[in-house]
Length: 162
Image 1 (tube, one colour):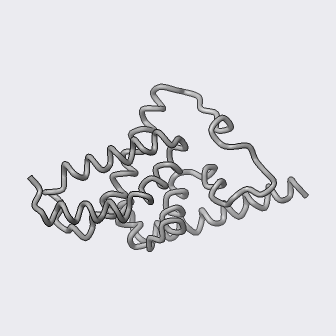
Image 2 (cartoon, rainbow, N blue to C red):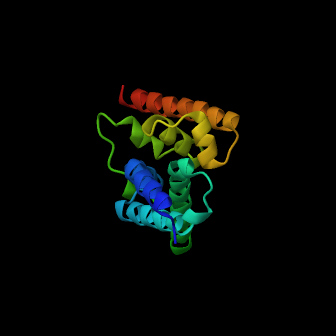
Image 3 (cartoon, rainbow, N blue to C red):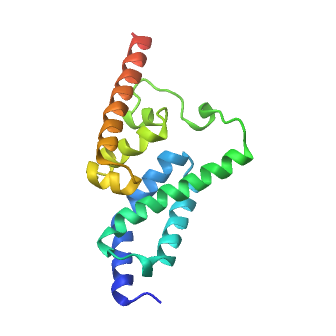
């Protein structure tokens, strides 16, 4: 049974990160119901392991990592269920002005997650490295490459309209 301190830290971490967890899951899964399920699974998994977490200050990062893991689990289940997946059915139709975050869906996950965590959720490169279990330099280079890819996508679309 978790102590009162562990319970309080868990509730505070959930209150502070629940929206970020949902946004990350939604970007990864592109379906609101699946994103809600992934967040719920992440919360449950973290709660079950709360007594094994040594540094309670790391709970927000732990929750984010659990969300990413739960989202990967959903994606693996989908892959088994469906062999062909057409993104045009999931993504909304292209409009005159496409928000930048819509372009993230076209990037590989190794670039999409660091960009999302950095610019949408405000995590530092060091925090992202901890969440994703990567060296800080790798995170920094993936952010840089991902930004270049986003720029290329936007420029190609601008040329297509012009």
